[in-house]
Figure (cartoon, rainbow, N blue to C red):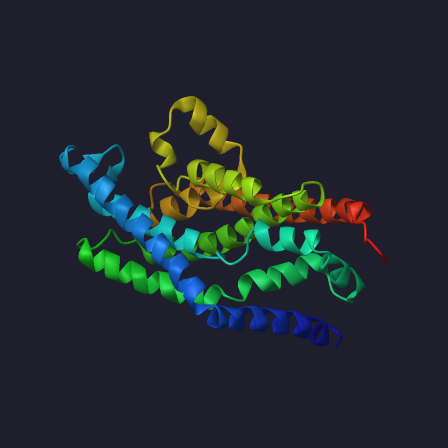
Length: 270
């Protein structure tokens, strides 16, 4: 009986976060515009590459590569309003002290903040994706409904994993004076090792081995390869399982970091 009232406050936080998107419409539009420019540039780049490869490159045909790029765009478009900067500002300005006095779970609150804008981000990404697909002549479809369903599951896990990664990295704000460099570094590493820029299959063996032991491949590569059906059944199940394990492990790691971090909090003048 107490679960519904307990969850209601987090739904309220998510709803407030959702409404913020409409308050800062210009910021959301500019962010989406930049993402669109990036995905269009990637399409033209890979189109040029494929023109010199007789329509196929490695395990990818051009329609499959277009699908891969669209999946990368979709997963990168989700949870764009949640990053290290928000928590960094809260910590530096002392607003974190308010969270400590509230009867809420800090990680759950941040998760509610993060997922609030998801409906807007998802619908905008799908709309933009549809326009890009039309402009570039269509993409490969999943080989069967099972892979389509598994893709949805993998994308949901990728979103949870993205939150867990950003949350853990955000904890460094308790020990640093700024988050800009950390956020840029995390984004650069994430885009490279997730396969967002280049599919991991094109990496040299040593770099592919590095990517294989890190959680980032679960953000783009696993959902994209699941969509395309380029992994057999056991491998697909394994990779989705790896996504889930990393997401749970990093969520618990984030909670452990939070317990340690609040000991470093100093409230000046109070």
